[in-house]
Length: 183
Image 1: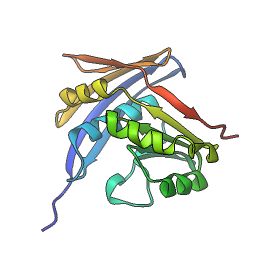
Image 2: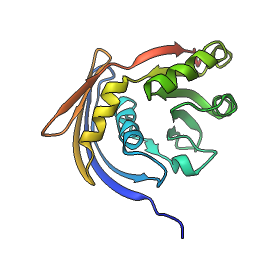
Image 3: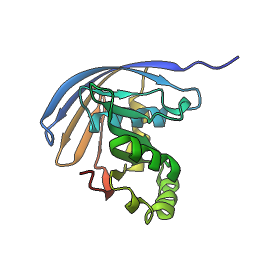
Image 4: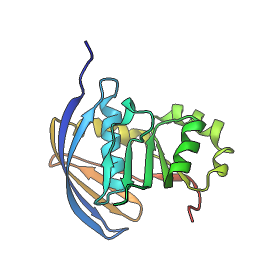
């Protein structure tokens, strides 16, 4: 018998002063049976960093030809493809061929650092790609914000994000390791 996804609900209030984006998103997040709480909460944080009215979670881990998040045009073209973790080069090449812009968010500390050392010289072949590293300690703290029903507030200013609920807040500044020119 196949295991089913665990469903989480989140009300995410975003104040992104860097992009002048202010909105509340009601999210339904399906946690795949093989996905950790850390990864799921990192997806929520990445959603906040890239929030847009058309940004959405995909079927993710269980679907090979979809990213973790994407933003699509009204004519169903992919504007933004967002990956988490350490994808193989073939997946990044495919993403850059399908989307106007691709963002890879690395988290998991040493594992991502090893991945980056192996791929740092190769990413220059993908001008649509940006590689962003998230602070490992901050990501680990995200797990404490998790509950089946969440009310989260995200404030982004000068490249730093504060994400929290009524009880605690986590601060982190994503580090851009590579930024291609998608134009």
